[in-house]
Amino acid sequence: MKKNIAVLTILALLVNLLCYGQSTYSYSQPKELGDEWKTENLKSQNVDTTLIYKAFNQIKNRKNKIHSVLLIKNGKLIIEEYFKEHSVNKPHDLRSTTKSIRSILLGIAIDKGFIQSINDPISKYLKNPVPKKNLDKRKNSITIKNLLTMSSGLDCNDWDKKSKGQEDRVYRKKDWLQYTLNLPMINNPGEVSNYCSMGVVLIAEIISQASGMTIDKFAEEFLFKPMGIHNINWGHTSNKEIIPSGKRLYMTSRDMAKIGQLILNKGIWNGEQIVSKNWIEESTTPKTKITGIDYGYLWWNIPFKVNNKIIVSKTATGNGGQYIMIFPELDMVAVFTGGAYNSQEDKLPFAMLNDILLPTLSKEK
Image (cartoon, rainbow, N blue to C red; front, side, top):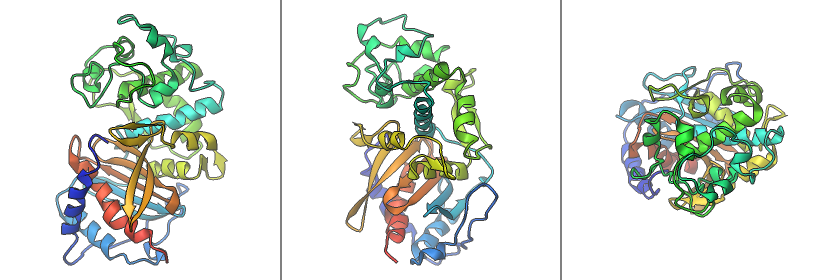
């Protein structure tokens, strides 16, 4: 969430302006594909679908960079739309949405006993590499929790191009882990939260070293396999050889929705407790603020004002318009993928939710 969500006002107006004219959108109930998703017709919600139909008509016929929209209500997939060349079986680059999934993996690592506590110093688990430059005793106090809340104190701020730990700078380096640990300290650990991707790479490496498994193998064994998630891969836009802990996920929209439903169900998928209820509640509860927005352990808390009422979404976000949004109050999950990289157009799903989907689906039957 790089910019203040005041930009939604402009985008909301844009959506309202577009949502006029005769609709040519034709709704179809999502198909059941044997992937553990049950589907239901949108009409079962007994709501006025006029705005929803008009919105999808505009997405289909007007220039935009939305790739998919999925909506799950009461555990059933009721909306599933793909645009451009995207389809149900095509994995999408999740960008920073991967961070929130790493948060789940950390919770599993704690549940399994690989990691004792997020209050432990990172040096307890991260044995190699160790800091070699800008030695500072405060580095010994950096905890896993500091990495989760983006408050390590290291000079690492993705949204400040002058920061030595800004992600694009680090991508040009040979050894991301060593470079990150060598960054100078500019704050005491736990004092200031700045958005820092490299801190989350350190979290992935901690899970890997503590468990003796690369992060992709750990995720496959303890998260993806139990949830029936198979059509995934790990990669990066950098042409350099990337360590497993530095790679991000490529996943289908349906499987993103499974992650959202896992959060909504307090760590349970298909009757199995994949990650503890306590971790889900802790990780999605606000612990700090980044650019004024509530932030938990790699999960955002984003408020929407609908019918003079505030509805909070537990949200995973990624550059370009990759979102998993969980609305516990409405028993609802929304998933978006897109290609609006480094553009404010990636906020269009927020306007669509705020002006169309939430007002429609939050009305009592």
